[in-house]
Image (cartoon, rainbow, N blue to C red; front, side, top):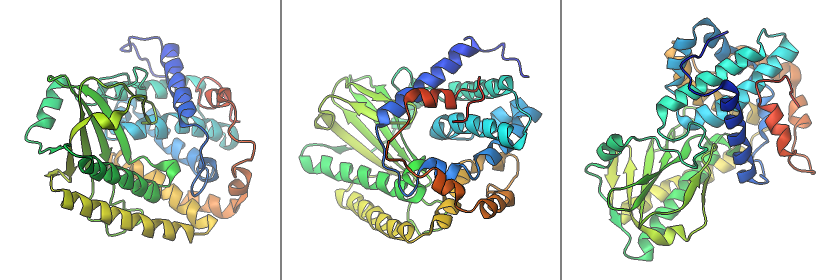
Length: 362
């Protein structure tokens, strides 16, 4: 059991905040159509094994594990680590007799909270409706020498909006919509001139999982809006707004692998490239068998944690025992967790499922 005297809040308050953030994000997401499969159709084959491998490192050396977790993006730390590793540990305890206590799971969640506190300057779980990564000084340095496209006509807005949508669709196609970790919003940042900045970050566009020939690795879209806008970003990086937000777009910058692109035709070419790659990727996935989708889904999930495993000088790829489990189980979980017609369970189900203080597994 690890002591966390450095935390200012009571541990139960932190856990309740985490569960409130999860609940809000799930409700915000609404009813979802899963493509190409539901999370549990894939997670059930590996989440206990992945959770054990991460948690073993935590138990051996909590501070070293914390350092390793600092290498992961906030979008992975929140939705893809917090709830699913907690669930994975519960499943490992129940079905594999893995030795983990509720107190240890709480301690692990507190470590993630502390890592997020170091990586963001807003609430770690986005309960202040923001996801601010930059301090004021870091933001100033980030914005230095950026080249902007002024939105004088609707055509300029249309160009960047099409790029934003096609990039997001491409991310969904290479990571499945259920594991689309490689895109997230951060901000809002209130600038000294009274305007507001939002950043939409895309990364791992050239994922090793598919080894497809993509011309770019990471792209940041920087949006500056006139005045103070009302937007919210939640635990899953959903962006919400009520105003006519995009009509207030003043200017934007497109940062491609660290370089600013300002010519509209060049931006359109980048859009065309990812639109083409998305279409190819969707056709590829639609031709896969359920077994192949399961294999790819597991590789996607492990790949998003690769920097954690590389910190320990380990191969990020899924271990052989996962493939043995798939071989033994066949399509058991694929059929068991296929989306039901009655829709999503009540929100209280998810609160219990992801709460480290109980042993509920559904």
